[in-house]
Length: 337
Ligand code: UD1
Image (cartoon, rainbow, N blue to C red; front, top):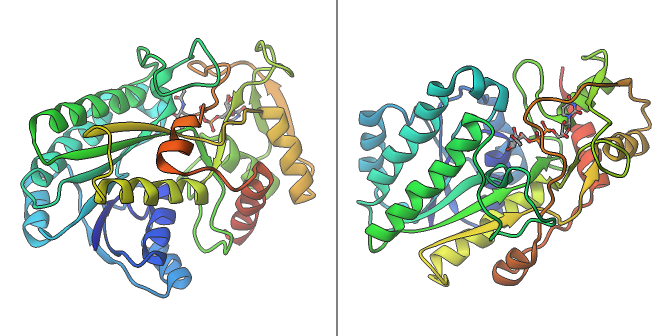
């Protein structure tokens, strides 16, 4: 079966392509290379021994997108990763985010709803919950007003897909709400490749340990948590990639309760920033240079998943630990220039 992966050269996309190819799917990647590199394709080939079909495509270009789907009308399913994801950048340039994350989704849905198979997996985020009132966070927790245009694009994206599933009879979709994806493939052939200064915790930690950054800032130690730092649910990207496979198989086997379903994808465990630092120091043997600074605007205090629904209905659970994830991220970092 032929599966289209948009943004397939990105961090989560590339690991999912590897998982798909290992399962015997034929993969077609589109990526505009705005936040990824063609070298990722080489990493995928090294790991799997298979070369996916690759087309450089900017989904914002409506005509090019329609042309692509005319050529690939035998796609059985789409996993849609292509999107911008930097929270701060989205606050500075919201229209870029709405164009890049929403217009592209609309064009994709317009084309997909004309194909024989209309199966879509959407990359969503736990950011849709904001600061949830109850922890762990279940899928029925209310979606709160987004704290950033980026977060808003995930909420609006889910609504657009829900409306499409309700109006186009054959259209089916699963939205995966990721908690904090981290780590790299154990081979260190693919991993997270942030352009410029990393905004996320783990690449900032590994780059600091590698000497590329002088010091990590811990954004606040006065939160009402066990050690005062924020708590997140860090999920290994290898586990996350597998969650896409089981979700895809649910779509393809038409084994769904509703035409549109959402699942949390996390480990169910919360770790504080200081715990992540300690764990990194343990697995890498490196002493990390860090200091406590002020809070980062927009950060929620605590977010970790209730994984009951994804465990039960998708039969998926995280297998890798935070140690595994940080070890693989460190191995990957050491391979970079
Ligand atoms: C954010 C987004 C999430 C998005 C993800 C990927 C929100 C609420 N969350 O997650 O939707 O999918 O980015 O881009 O918008 N930290 C430091 N120092 C640093 C960096 C981070 O202390 O240099 C702390 C943060 O305060 C936070 C934790 O580390 O407590 C994780 O931060 P980060 O990796 O940026 O992820 P989120 O903000 O949780």
